[in-house]
Image (cartoon, rainbow, N blue to C red; front, side, top):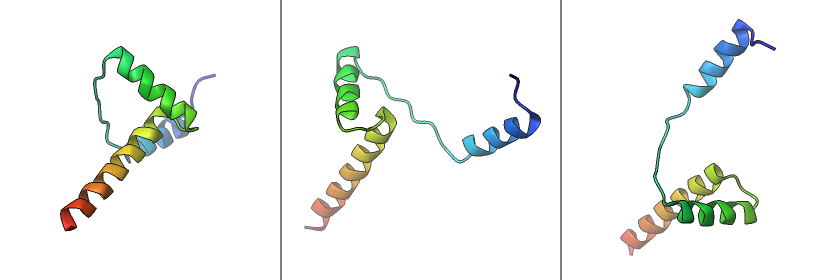
Length: 65
């Protein structure tokens, strides 16, 4: 089934809210990270976002001390 013009516009509007970040990992490391994310009940994207947020928070606290 083809997308309607409204669906195409809605998808484009949704994608415009985000920036893309690429990273490269060795295959073995990606497998470890992916398995960990799944074990935590998260998608790989959700895990990476959480890990970044936690690192930023930790770094800010360390800097304040």
